[in-house]
Length: 144
Image (cartoon, rainbow, N blue to C red; front, side, top):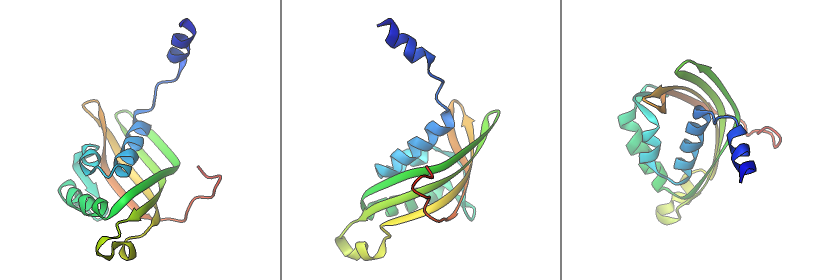
């Protein structure tokens, strides 16, 4: 028992920004728009100055079009600055579009984007304040 406790205590503290990214990925995989929105600051600005109020309906429509979604994070770079952080990563998306209404022919089964995020600790919870993204090349198999 003492060895288990010692091993647990000796682990480095989990990076809260990495935890935020993992939570966002898990929320997307669960197609849980409310959980994603919970990780966005009220002052969130997306690509093209999209406010948080517009992200919710957009996510719900997008998630509704898929039976399942997979998210893989690659090349994650986190620069901490006091209670804020800049995050750059590549996100590989895969999904199975719903067969209803011809969505399988309209929605992409996979996509890769490069994200640049500004995050901040807001009362003990890390949230994304700004996000920009652009299409990217798939990461190399060894480029996790």
